[in-house]
Image (tube, rainbow, N blue to C red; front, side, top):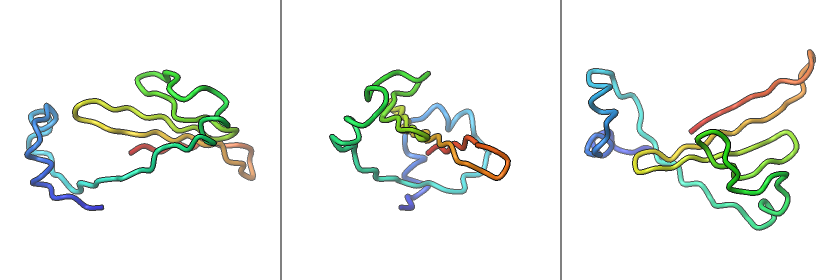
Length: 95
């Protein structure tokens, strides 16, 4: 869902000083559902395991989702293994 750039710029963020003059192209709000008990049970590592500055939400064979959250940021990183014609590739995405 799109959010107003003005709404974002009203937040008291250090990034506004650091990025002064850098164009703001998009502001989005992502409402993600929380994990089910089955997701927690089937995870190869316990939910909440630290992964760098992130906390693991789940790790399944070939897929993992981690989250970071503080007063200004709520981010996710998803990594996945996918077979290709030349072998296996690891892909990642963040929000």
